[in-house]
Image (tube, rainbow, N blue to C red; front, side, top):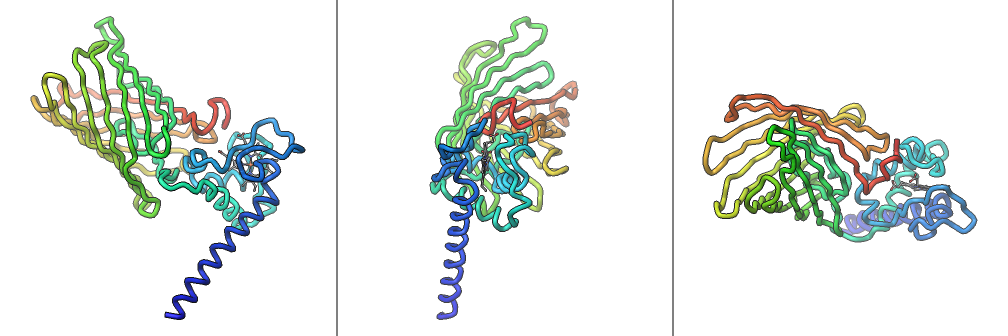
Length: 331
Ligand code: HEC
């Protein structure tokens, strides 16, 4: 028992000396630019072209991975298309010192409940991501186009608005608008997994003649270097009631230092009336900016059963994570 207590005391001392060291490294190396409290207000004597980041903000630190911040501190801002003012510490500091100072600044958030950036898996074409995002996305699905705006609210909520148009022979391109809200109900960095509940509402506008609601559950997990994402959606229509359900499952794997993410999704539609339909969506997610805040995806929808004639369609999207950096920075 005494030995266990000694071990526990040792571990606690070690942890507190780590954070004390992170603290003093921060004061020595970073504080004249990022501010004594890390809130991004530089010392009066420091002149910078770009405002230094607020490192203590929960919204900023939790949206990114620890490794990304270690990368920026090691290789400097310029290596990620950020300002040259953010120096590279890789030559002058040890890896442990860099990890310590990064852990120290990330600990300044101090609030529980923010899903960590490590669980922000690459977006698929079909499956609604479980991670709340600040993103603008332009989607193409054969003759259909979609513009999606996603905005985080607080720690776990995300609001979403989307507009859909279809360029077909009908000559009335405006198809629909949808509003959605999602809430991250659970996440665990230790288990590398998260789950989110959401609901989408489509009013009778454009080509839609009745209200539609689609509550869903989304989840994601990382295992052995693979990411598995899934979504179950129910659909309800005004005057008709439950119209059906959809089940979606995707698997992806990062390659080329996370610059490319090949992915395959499967979508199984089970309508209340009519035949079930299964389609596969092979696709490639591509990081476009050096910072990774602008990315694209290209692939195909390949009907397997239930759709006749079974014609494949082109799928693509372009996304900008505006919470991360302005559109023209980070290249
Ligand atoms: C000479 C001034 C300066 C010093 C010293 C400095 N930084 Fe920075 N840092 C900046 C600036 C300016 C930016 C913003 C770059 C941009 O947005 O283009 C930045 C950005 C960052 C970012 C990226 C934040 C994000 O949201 O992407 C991190 C992380 C960071 N700094 C950590 C540190 C740490 C840790 C230290 C000390 C080891 C440090 N910085 C020292 C000026 C500095």
